[in-house]
Image (tube, rainbow, N blue to C red; front, side):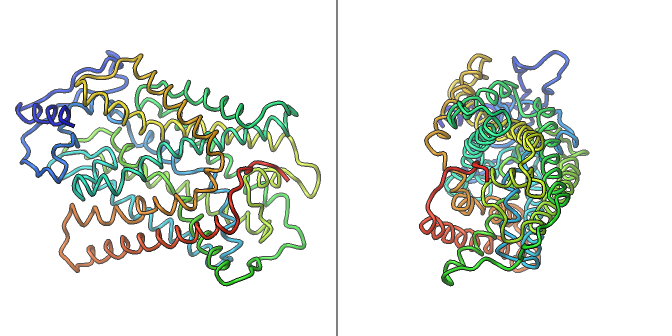
Length: 492
């Protein structure tokens, strides 16, 4: 941290600082642009994060994968948002509707979508301060809003879990889907789960060698196409196969009121944690250029509007069609859901349909891995450049990425039940999307106490914290009652 302070102090002592050219940048300026960094800003207190290297003042930003290139645009931001915003967890939305029913299911889904869209708007407009400083990482904005100690305490675990932990989950899900594909489509019985994890991890790390977040825009394009593709394919096939005659839409019977409460809260948790990506929202906006005449929030909000419209058109039909077809008999695991979708009118599952869906999901997991892992790579390089005051060499970047791939692989092998913990850990990290942005808006913008904006943000922030606590309690209850089961991909 002393080295970091030295870098920032040096930047503040010079009237103007120009970003050094990074060794990964080409002469055609394909990956980045040279941006002058002015330092004529009023001094800030230590507790506001002035000593932490936050914002556009820090020349270190030109060396890090998140902010190395600011040549993005609305289209690239849209691809990143769709790719990071739609996950295979969306397949469980009909399961939530089976407990909540039609009315409450649609109400909760609409409420969650509107709520997280509002907090996204807050983050997009908090990305740049009035003095021109850009906060291109969620943790830096939290430090600015809450102070150094409280900001790090509140957000380090949620941000690291939703980046590194998401990568581990993607290995488990992608590897599990690959195992399902090999055993049920290719009839290859010799590959086990660990070997499939390793194959997926190797492919993901090979793709992860791109230097910065902006350079993987085409990967996010593929991820966006596959995400929209498998969601649309699944709900369209569900409607096409027709509805069995013995389907019921009544909530499943439970033994006690506590079981009913746990089931309801677990279903609400499934809906709320389906919407993801807030931990990379500021990072994606950090790839966009910005000036006083054309601030980045205009391009970013256009990208958010387009991407969230597409996300809504994917998730709402998926939830409604899945519940309409299966009712309260909706399968509870990914493998059973995929097998049920490919099973037309009670016949043997179509290997072509099952194989196609599996391939699309694996490609999507590989693409999504690149966005969330970039946050981890950025943090690793941040620690190195803070100590050495120079950018990472290309070989060192490769070492960092292969090292993270190995750690993530071993975590996936050791914790194959991690997706079962998603309701629990998702409840713990829920404030990152639904509460903290509201409190950060109040802390930074300082609206008049008890004014309309103050009451809305304070109310939503407190409600988000209460919801987080309730979901964690319900998740613990469900885990103690049902236990852990790591076999999510076994077909019917």
